Image: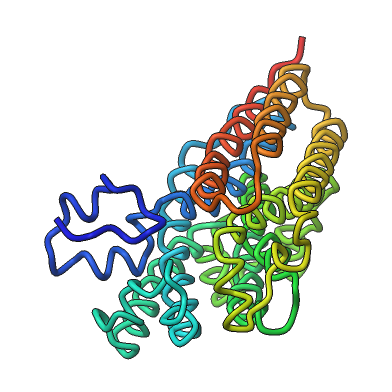
Amino acid sequence: MTTPLPDAAPTNWVDRLAPAGWRPWLKLARLDRPTGVWLLMLPGWQGIALAGASRGEGPDLRLLVLFAAGSALMRAAGCAFNDIVDRDFDARVARTSGRPIPSGQITVRGAWIFLVACALGGLAILLSLDLLAFYLGVASLGLVAAYPFMKRITWWPQAWLGLTFNWGALMGYAAAMGGPPVIFVLRVLAGAGLRGADVQATTAPLPWPPVLLYLSGVLWTLGYDTVYALQDMEDDALIGVKSSALRLGVAAPRAVTAFYAASLAVVLSAGWLAGLGPLFTLGALAFGAQLAWQARRLRLGDPVLALTIFKSNTIAGLILFTALAAGAWRP
């Protein structure tokens, strides 16, 4: 068993069970720290649940599986890109110096090959979705590519992460609302069997409920990633990178509370506009209670507690997913 990275659980499955040669690659994909995969996947699941509940139906199980696989692949690709760009910074921060690239376990060339392989896998999944979801997936690449540079130019890279991580809410809703898979549309177009009006019908604008769900997720992420950034405040200040935690300083706990409160208010608005049933409201309040628990416990100068609170957001996201799915029931 190898030594786990500082923000991985001591008993994580990669260090305990994976073959030695696989471990650097699995760590590059952050599979020893699956919280990020969950937090990327859950907005997509929530969008799928919202679309189903607005029709009085449960979430589409096929789409839940596809979004889970796609999130794991794109999280891996995004982490590889982030580590390639940040390799010099990572080598100077205690929490990240043991990552595969700065520690020399994986070369930059190898990381690029890994990134491309994961992206191709993600593309295969994207082609099985409808045309609007496909367009949204392609559009997300700009957010992903820009994210590693945000900490160099703004105090709010956590807000950009929110824009990026929650894009799946829009994609999930679009995919669940139906329409032929994009690969089918392209085949028909190639045979001139589909009119322009038919294509336009598959890319109708999204209504307000998924847009509000997305905005709620952005605020949620701004809160939980500020919590995460509390771990690195001293190192970030020394090496000259920016974060919301550094910008907010002693006001960070109050700001996290405000971000979480705004997230709850916006998601309640999304459910109301979608006409969801009363079980959604009860579940959303449980989501808010979990966020309030986080905010109440948060303290500066305790990185272990910050990591624990950050990881609890997988529970918060699952609560909200369940609430949205339960909203399909109307008395």
